[in-house]
Image 1 (tube, rainbow, N blue to C red):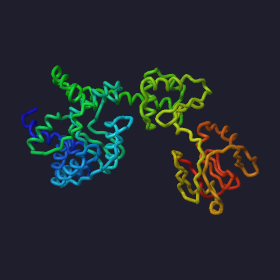
Image 2 (cartoon, rainbow, N blue to C red):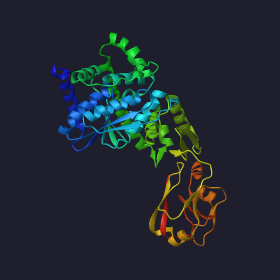
Image 3 (cartoon, helix red, strand yellow):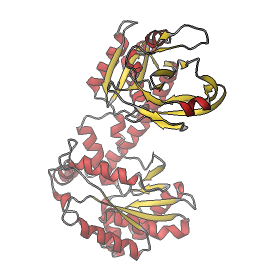
Image 4 (tube, rainbow, N blue to C red):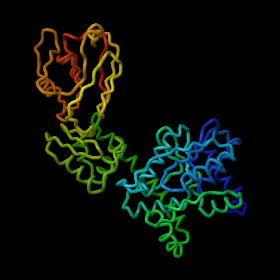
Length: 439
C-alpha cells in the first residue's frame, strides 16, 4: 500500500469503492452498531459517504442485556449516532444464558433476528480480516466442510436484504489507526477478554503464538476462505445439476440417488436438505440418511426425523414432510377465503370456480369445520355413485400413510365434504368456492 492508503482517507476511499460497487443511489443501509471500535469506524465512514453516494443511512444497536454496562453502551451509541445525524434504533433482546448452543451462539442468533427486522436494502456489518481469520480457524477446528471454511463473504443475501461487510479486507490495526486519527471514541465490551468463549480464546491465546511464526496468517486464512468459497460454488453447481437429473416431482428419485457415487450423493442430499431449510447433518448422520434412503427395498417406506421435519422415501421418491401430527384438532370455517390451520398444518385458500366448488347457499347454511381423520369416514364423489371409505380412496390415490394423518378434512357437521387431492362430495359440488390446501 502507498503511504496515503495507510491514512484515514485511504481506508475511507477503499470502503467507498466497495459500497459504490453494490449500493445504488436511493437505496438504504442499516449499520449494525455495537459502539465498539469496528462498528464505530464503519458508521463514521458510512456517514461521510451517504450524501455523495446518495444512500439513506440508519443504525441498529442490539441491547443484549448481558452486561451491567449495557444501558451505558446504548446511551453512548445514541450520542455517537446523533452527532452524525444518523437515526438509531435500540433493539432490546432476551438471550437465554442456559441456551444449549452456548451463550455466544444465543447472542448471535438474537442479533441476527434483529438484523432481519431492519427493513433496509443492506445491513452493514463491521467484520474485518482478523475476524475472518478467527472464523476460518474456528470452523476448521470444528471439522466443518468447504462451506464453513468459506467463512464470511463480503455480501450475502439474507431474507429481503443484503448483508454487506465493506471492512472484510481490512486489518484491525488499520481500523484502530483510522479511529485514533479521526479522534473517535468507542466502548469496550469487557466480555471480549473472557477466554471461556472460543473466539476470545483464539484471539488472546492462540493467534499471538501463530503470528510469531506466521506473521501473514491473516492474509493466508482470508485467501483460504476465498478459495473455499469458489470450491463451494462449484459443488453447489454440481449439486444443482445432479438434483435436476434425479428430480422426481417435488422430491428426488431414490433410484437416481443410488446411481450416484457416494460423494455426489452426499452433495446432492445437502443441497436438497438446504433447499428445504434444514440444518446440515453431520458426516456420519448424512451417510446414514443416504444409506437408508437408497438401500431400502423398492416398496419400503422410510421415515427419518431431522431438524423437526421428516425425510421420507415412499414409492421410490424422497421428499421432506412435516412431522405427522396425530393429536386431534379442529378449526371452524365461516366462509373466509383463507383459513389458517395452525401447528404447521398450513392453510386452506378458497378460489372462485365456475366448474367445481361449494355453493354459496350451502356454505351459509352449514356447520363447517376442518379436522383430521378419525377413522371410518365415507364420501360419495359422483352423483349416483357409491359411497366410498376414505381409507380406500387414499390408498387408490397413493397418498402416503404419514401424509394421511396431516390431511385437513372439511366437514359440514358430521358429513365429510372435501378431501385434499380427492375431491368434493357430490351432494355439495356446484359452481362456488373451491378449497385448495397449501401445506
